[in-house]
Structures are given as structure tokens and as C-alpha cells.
Length: 470
Ligand SMILES: Cc1cc2nc3c(=O)[nH]c(=O)nc-3n(C[C@H](O)[C@H](O)[C@H](O)COP(=O)(O)OP(=O)(O)OC[C@H]3O[C@@H](n4cnc5c(N)ncnc54)[C@H](O)[C@@H]3O)c2cc1C
Image (cartoon, rainbow, N blue to C red; front, side, top):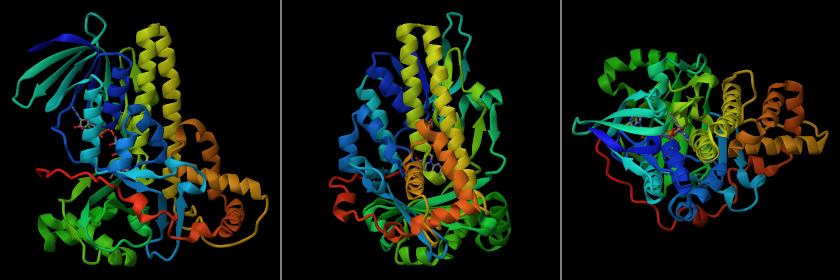
């Protein structure tokens, strides 16, 4: 079957990147088709969002709904595995106003809300429609996209431009051999949701908790208060450590070895033993294997296509940056496409080049920050607010400390060069000593609170989570 309509833009995937681009393009008067293989709501990892998403939510017209619906996130608490050393990075230390409180979102509900919002603004969305082939050399200069419906029927669609927002399926990159695994980041995440337990260490006020796992594990644990009384807890581990543990756990646990590994890692932390005391798992375990990869920047866009969101690169989720990187890249690419459709191809291409210069800069910087995080020689962010020494050049270190907060808040697109310098400082022992000296004088760094009232964190109208078929 051939769909008779020719769209301005055909988008593969209705996740945050696809639905953001779709909404913004539709708002500007362009015709948009989103082809999504799943039936929404569908489960997804990636539940803790950055404050820099705020202007995007406003532009998409969903900010008020977000404020009423989702748990607020005042910052991030980084802890050593034993829970003895920690640093609380509150966005409110450096940001004034409502955007110093970010959000945690159950992704099945959040992604469905974004996709429905794109429909509301005029996008055509076809769910349960899996793209199987793309032809970029359509005779009239556009693209032909072939997809398979849940019924097994094949449909062909036409557009002037293709956006690949297929997430970690990386539709275009897979078919063209562009995807490169990140050589140093062979990590896998095991995660699920828990009900009950104890809201310790700032969980009751919405702080994202990140626990370092040192040694061979080269990993970390996240705890996200996703709803009142419900926690998302994930463990990220190095591939070779998982391989070793699998050999040990298989004989006793059989096909449940991943669940056994997940619980084993959580229960090694005294902090988590206390948090999860009395809690129960309420969802099947999600496994996201070897997730980091990149695609060379010259492959990310061409004459009539562009890759956005995870379809264009994904780097380890430690800084909870994926949704923001994806949505903001989608916004920039949508703006460049608007230029193309209204001012011509030449101007459009120049706008696209400018957009990707910023997008690539942001991803490069996030990669540097993540490599810093995993460097065993570097001082970690749990210790960055801990320890003592001397205070010199106060203003300089004040600025540097603010940079650390902005990094965690998501300011990577405009100022990645300055933040790169911040990371160099953390890696230089001499400079770091002075930095510690400055930081120790700030008691708020050592607190396990950002001073936000519980009533401002948990929403008045929390979402009812859908019952998922697993
Ligand atoms: C373990 C882990 C933890 C994470 N934690 C965080 C976090 O705390 N905060 C954060 O911001 N980010 C986090 N992320 C990253 C975040 O999940 C992603 O960056 C984000 O979901 C990317 O959005 P996207 O729209 O590009 O892709 P997706 O959200 O994956 O959406 C892609 C969509 O495309 C559809 N699709 C795929 N192939 C096809 C096809 N052939 N035809 C039609 N449809 C197709 C899929 O069904 C899917 O709905 C995490 C990631 C991992 C792996």
C-alpha cells in the first residue's frame, strides 16, 4: 500500500527526540508524520531530567502539566559506596527561580504525553508501524519510507526530509555501518522499580542519588524517587565484571542470575540496605546492555536526512543527560528545517551545519565528563565537596563551583568549553586541593538536603501508572 500524502518531514520513532521535533515542526506549520513501532505507553529507562529542559517544556506547552504531575528534583547527591562521604549538588545553589527544581518522570507516562502533545499540534502519528526500509534517492528528491504494520501489511510513505529518532535502535546508523561502540564504556544497566522502603538521604525531597561502585565494577547505582513511595533503582556495571559474576551465579540461580546479581550489588551498600529495608520489587528487571556508542559527526546529517537523539549517539547515562540532549538536539534540528522550508535549501543547510556544530560540541563535552567520572585517578564528585585545605582566589573557585552545578543541570550546548576547563581542574591534584579548600567552607555541600519542603516535591496530581504487559 502507498500512502498518497507527501509530508514535509517523516520521523522514525516517537520517543522524546521524535515527538519534540514533530511538535515544533507542526507548530511552525509543516506537515509531519511520526512512525512508531511500539504501542504507547511503552516502558523505557531514563527517568531523571535536567533543569535545562525547562525552556523546552515551556515551548512545547507542557510545563504547567509537568509541574502538576511529576516529582520535582532539586539536585543530585553523589555518595561513596559506603555512604560515608557524599556531596549534595543542589541546582538552587546557583539557579534562581522555579527551574532550580527539575523533574523525575515515569517514562511510559511522560513519553506518551509528549507524543499526544505532538498529535494535538497537528502531527500524524502511526503507532505499531515499524520502519523497515528507507530510500533517500526518491526520484523527486525526497525520501521513501517503507514500514510494516502490526497486521503484517507493508505501507510506503513519502516525505521531503527524514528524521531518524529511532533511539538506541539506531535505524540509519545500523543499516549504513556508521555505529561505533564506545571503546572504553562497556557498561550494562540492570534496573526496576520498588515500592515502600525508607526515604533516607534526601530521597524524601526528590534528590537523585548516585552511588559510586569502585574496583572492578567500574559502575554506579541510581536511586530515583519516581512517585511518592516508589523508587527506580538501577545498577550500572562493567561488562567483564558481569561476565565473571554470571559464571558464579548461573549454577544456583539459573535464568534468574541477572536478578540475583542486581540484588547482590544493591545489598552490598549499607545505605541501600537501609533505604530498601521492607521494600518490594514491582516490575520485571530491565536490562540495557552495552549502551554507549557514537557516530562520526559527518554522518549525522545529509541532503535530506538527519539523526537526532540516541539515534545519533548515546553515551553512558551517569549525568542523566540523555533526554535533554535528545530533546534539545531535536529542537535545534527542527529550527534548521524550518529555515530550509521557508528560506531555501542553501540557508537550511547552513542552519543545519550550525545546529550540528553545537550538538556535536555538547556530546563531546558530555563524553569528556563521563570519562572523567570513570577515571580511577580523578577525584570523584562524592569527594568534591568533602575534605578541607586553603582558600586562595575565592572568586575563581566560586565560579568553578558554579560550573560544576551547571554541568549537572545540563548547560552543555552553549558553554561546553568552560566546563571542559572545570574537568581539567578536578583532574589536576594541585588545583583540586585549592578547590577543595574553597568548597569545604560551604556547609550546604555537606548536607544531605537542598532544603526543599516535601510538599513542593511530590505532586498534587501524580500520574496513575499504566498496567504494562511484559
Ligand atoms: C540505563 C540508562 C539510564 C538512563 N537514564 C537516564 C536519565 O536518568 N535521564 C536521562 O535524561 N536520560 C537517561 N537515559 C537516556 C535516555 O533514555 C535516552 O537518551 C532518551 O530516551 C533518548 O530519547 P530518543 O527519543 O532519542 O530515543 P527513545 O526514547 O529510545 O525513542 C526511540 C523510539 O523509536 C522507536 N523505534 C525504534 N526503531 C523504530 C523503527 N524501526 N520504526 C519505528 N519506530 C522505531 C522506539 O520504539 C522508541 O519509542 C538513560 C539511558 C540508559 C540506557
